[in-house]
Length: 168
Image 1 (cartoon, rainbow, N blue to C red):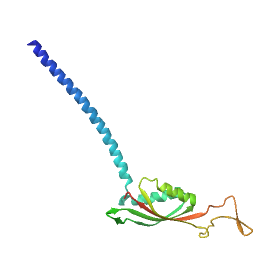
Image 2 (image 1 turned 90 degrees about the horizontal axis):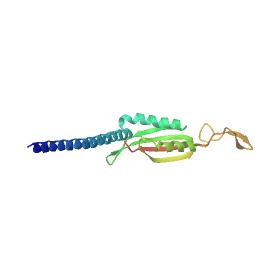
Image 3 (image 1 turned 90 degrees about the vertical axis):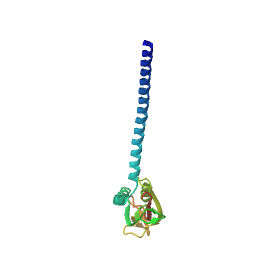
């Protein structure tokens, strides 16, 4: 009777040990899942921040203007539309850009690396030499030809750009 009683208690102790081990295993699995869910929540919020909505269009346009200012180019938005093609709504921004070739290209490159997905649908680039109020080159005339001076300006280029915001 005593041995049966001890065997019964040992069996209960072994059962309790199994339950504790199972609990620890489940607790670890649960904790791992919580960490995965938190990283997914962060990823979802990052992705949601990359989607441009009707409410965020003014902030987007402002960020484009700031990017142009940082790139030292003149940037003018001529139209903003959001047409629908095949049930896909997108944001189309037509703009004009004026600056040196290197700065204009730097702006277009920086535009490609924003948090929202951008596609340059059209790009027309042409020289503004002789077209603007400030000369494309500054200098002193010598024998009928301009002679560059140390502070002469780079040739100005105008770009007509159609930008599509894909993540709209």
